[in-house]
Length: 133
Image 1 (tube, rainbow, N blue to C red):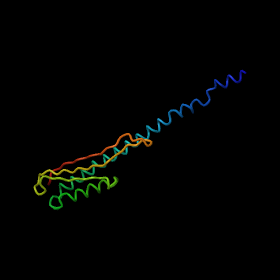
Image 2: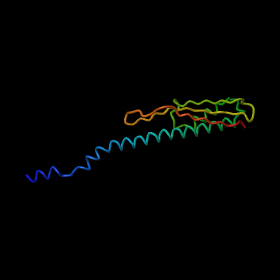
Image 3: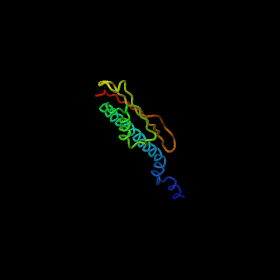
């Protein structure tokens, strides 16, 4: 009878049970960090692409394409993003006058999913303005 009581009080396997309780939370947290990192990387890529597009628009005012080269520059700089989801707009007050403002805006959708559960989603937007040279 004494042997049976010692088996009930044994703590063998306690760490495995605690790990089984905590491990799903740790995995979900790790996946959330990865998903937010991917969304942030997409935002940084989008911001750099709009900067490159605005620079291209600022120095090519005599090209006569009204910003088409800037759109191409944005898409080339954001080659890591899905090009079908990337939206780019280029506007200027006057394409022929030096010192006029040119604005390049780009949008890209994002979604943060953790284990099939959508935490958040929306649209990343970046706008860069420069003056025509």
